[in-house]
Length: 406
Image 1 (cartoon, rainbow, N blue to C red):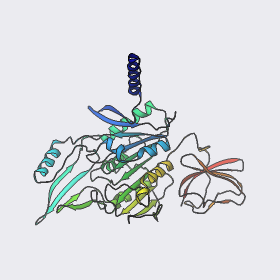
Image 2 (cartoon, rainbow, N blue to C red):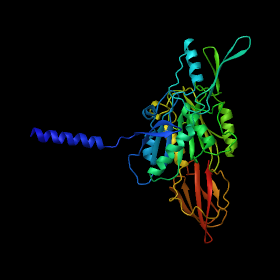
Image 3 (cartoon, one colour):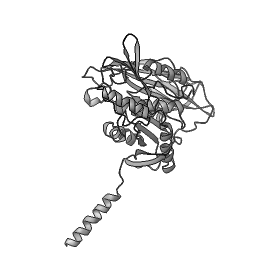
Image 4 (tube, rainbow, N blue to C red):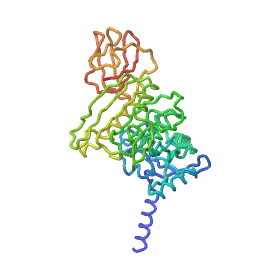
């Protein structure tokens, strides 16, 4: 009996050992260095995944912390996405390390354990008779993290069957990295999300004109990454980033987005006094959305159960869903266009032909409306704000057009 029990116990251990770890740690060689990342597979285990979300942790943080502190797996499970969470390297430049060590001598604790090569230039100056720069360094400027991220995306695409949707979601310095990748885009992006991040002063690729949908969250009361890009700490002027106004201007101009639509966010009853203004610069494919918070700190996580007027997971999930393309679900997409107006539209949509049938799909490929029409227009007031595909069948033809619903 004792021998049988031991056999069963050992068999149980073997089964546990064979169970897949999720997320799973992987390594890859890039530019002669061993790099690490975590991969998370959605719990529902589909045969075809809808894409990849790359989660980028903050300064001096880790890929494990990103998973532990953010509820990104909820989005992955609901939207059928694989998550890749890469790990940044410690600072590699000896000169920058020496500057940090010198700062530590003067009582400023600076560690450089995990730093993205994202074009972040740190300028610290003090005002005496004139302004004197004490520190002016670009962090990990010789580390090609754009290549690293691209490699793990490509490797994952070769391993799993999936649609070619790729989103970058970065927090703090990870947001800087998301913007840097978007400026270069060796692999086409479906969109980027930056939470409390910005664009560095020494980013590369601003003259490339690469378009990408942007979803940006930033608080005007952020004490770590100032909304204006420059702040004051311990009596010294610290410049970390471009101002948020400049960042938004760059992307709206590059994307050709329209005039801003402003909405005071009150999706849930607020009990903490933190306010959120949602500013949308509309475009049929490359919109820019900015959530301008007031009263929240750098690391504050918006959650409806905490008395917040919005929920980070829900808003990020909506953005990703709106820009997800499932190639096999939107029918007859490669057919002639028809002029619909106004576009953007709020309540009534004119269809460019007198009578026929119309179907409207959201950007996940889900049909949200189907109806016939006899007077050349339909009422779309019931649709939520967002982007849609309109498919019209009339006069023996099938027509399509993209629509922004305000």
